[in-house]
Length: 518
Image (cartoon, rainbow, N blue to C red; front, side, top):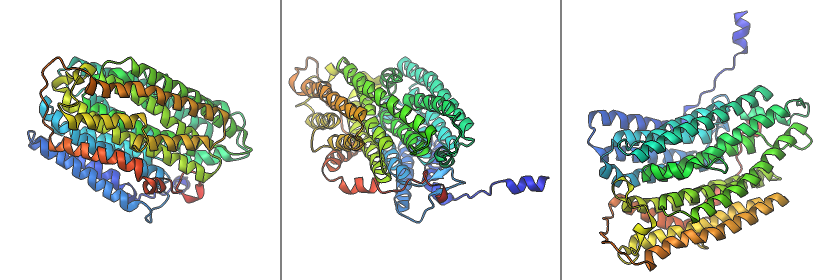
């Protein structure tokens, strides 16, 4: 009897080389922890180790692009496709920029640098596993690794009540969202008998799929929309964002606004676009697909409107950028829905690439803006009101002109990265030819026009408002200077010369769809 049981077990196919980029990041986190336990005051060294680990991971990831790597490995639990690769580069970029931005904050606030950098690396590992996961279990484990590390980072400024409140709100609401997500995964498993996305897609596509299961699929899909919606700050699950972003340390806010949001989008795309595809002639697939695309289109409209209108009323720069990030989640959802509505595999891959590229453009611009906010904010983020920026345009011209460029890119001014990102996600959605999606694009364009008010307000405050208090120009450190140079070059490069990168992001490679590739 035991022999028959063992014969039915699946033979594992571990392939360490496929997850080498993630392993490098995790090992770097462990090394930082060990080093910090022996040399706790060597803050710069722990940051250097983190940068080296992220750089090595990026190099290995680059060699895997187009290399001889299986489509899936670890019994189909890890996917190797352009969705994983493109988003992983975004994660590594965000984390490296966060390390550089944090150099000023770590010294100023006297925080435990080793603990901070280790948490950042483990959060990066979680993000990379979320984009690589071809199984609901792997995605959830990656999400929890990311979430727990981020909860702690948000409250790392232990003596600050605002930071404590931020971490507590994020932890409580994030736990609720994780519960919804996990329950949704359980319902999907109940309907299909599998947590592997390849097998789920194959079973839903089968013509004989039981017609009494769409209720479970719909409920599971709705639960997962709630869970992922919280992570990307999609309305109406965005309430936590302004308070958490304002209370968290500014470098952590920069990280949360770009990194975890991109990771949630990567998993969201893999589960809904690749794992729960529309299959012609299959009733269950049609029910589920029409339900989630319609619901997300409506919520994307609400997200764009709420984010932009609420940002207008903010007097705190961090809260303004928080509501701005909500609006940008709505713009990225436009490309997401375009991927779900795509009629061909090529159109789907291009739409997925547009979302990845949009998250990269947002990350470049957002990290540059938060680098300046970090530099100007002083200890405990005392200078984060709009009035604190009055009249600094000609007193600190380098910082003011850089911040103006980042605001214009977030707005979507032509020739900047933000403009190219919006063009791609909007065009990918319009290619579907769906009336509701067309209406969504119209709302997104109107939302972009509304955003001009609060983005240009920052420029007006810096250059056309009189300063009533003494201004002491902050010293631009080497690390902050490097961030500003990278961000400024990135804004123009991605706005003018991004064709090659876009083509690389959009090469076909969706390993989830075809079961034969396992």
